[in-house]
Amino acid sequence: MKMVKSLLLGSAAGLVAIAGAQAADLPVKAKPAQYVKICSLYGAGFYYIPGTDTCIKIGGYVRAEWNYQAGGSFNPVRSYNFDDPARDRTTERVRAGITVDVRSQTAYGTLRAYATILPTDTNDQAAAGANGGSPYNNPGVFMPAAFIQFAGFTFGKTASFFDFDLQPYSNQTNIWGSNQGGNGQQVFAYTAQFGNGFSASLALEDPTSRRSAIADGTWVPGAYPTWVSPAGGSGYAGRRWPDVVANLRIDQAWGSAQIMGALHDTYASVAANNSSSELGWAVGGGLRLNVPSLGKGDYFLAQIAYAEGAQNYIGSNFGNGGVGGMNLRDGPVAAPTNTAIGLVLDAVQLPGAAADLSLGKGWSVTAGYEHVWNPMWKTSIYGAYGEMWYSAAAGAALIGAGVDTDWSLWQIGSRTVWTPVANLDLSVEVLYTNLNNSSFDNLTVGTNGFNGRDYVSAIFRAQRNFWP
Image (cartoon, rainbow, N blue to C red; front, top):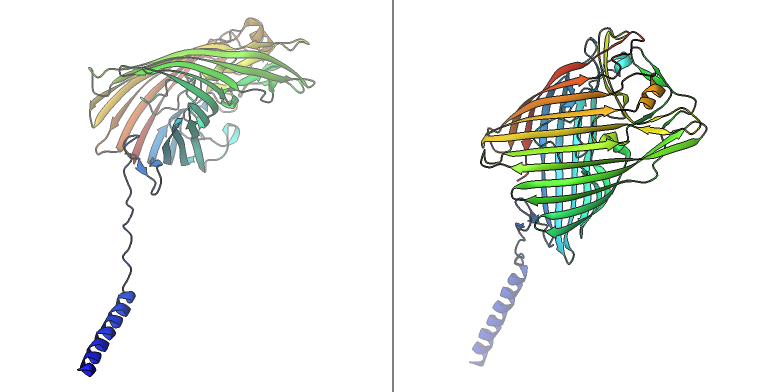
């Protein structure tokens, strides 16, 4: 019996050992997978970055467009000879946008970082010869926004705190208005929230894109009018201090309203390493009214602004200004028969040892209304008007006594957007522009006649959005 018992116990022990060895060879049970979790704190499209309490949303779009008598993003022509056979009448552009929005909660409120990256490819609109280089593809990467927001502060690149009407009713890269949202501004700003939708902001902003031309010297008429400045003649000197921008704003269910102001350093470098400066400034106001009684999603939006020595606060798309701010021509390239000119100058250097600056002045208004017919169709109508003028002393210093340098420009346009399926927008837009330059109506020198000029531009755009 003892032998049998020993055999049984030994066999049992062997089976246990074998079973234990086999169990050791089995795979270890995997830890539960950590699935992406929706973050509902900040609206649709956000989710938690796995393993953190930080929420992120990634979005963007792909866009293709065809422009007639306009640059990419429906940029109205400013320096253009309508009779130049080498001038391209059409411009094509493709753009892909990627947006990243990252947010988390802190003891000081929401910490946010946002960036937009826009790779873009545009066929060049410029013609050969005096009007520009040969046509070619012009790819590049564009970043209109990259900023951090924390405890009321905004650091980085975004729209100016002066801007209100960002023209959502149009594809146009507008001429009038202060809108720098498409380019972005370097800002260091603080916004105080008072509750009930009331807020106030104070910002220090990069003045570069708000600089227009400072001119002196002698006007030289001809095919491409310009100035001949004395040696070391005037122009903007280096940046000394940022633009100071402030606004008061309200945002409620009925819409929004804002009043705003800006101070700008109009600082010229003049002959013999001297300098001269004046304080440029701008003020404005804006209003948005939501009108759901006319259509779900309908709104009216407008902005008005006045500036002295800071012309890019009333006209955000005049480039570096000067004669090329607006210069529309007809006739042969070498000797145009008509030139319509709108001078865009922050200041004119007056003659004399003091090198005093006479500030340019102007005002503009932009407005648009968009009606939503149904979820698939919406149509807008919009317009803009602006004027710029200069003192008699400035006109005499540049061109001659008794020459009227005032000019105006107005536009009216309409856009219709068809959304056949969600997140696909197909839009057609037509814009009429009229430049009226009393500027030089009584100037009869050179080969040019100086009159107004109008033209029509158009765009077709297809855009696939892929943000929630």
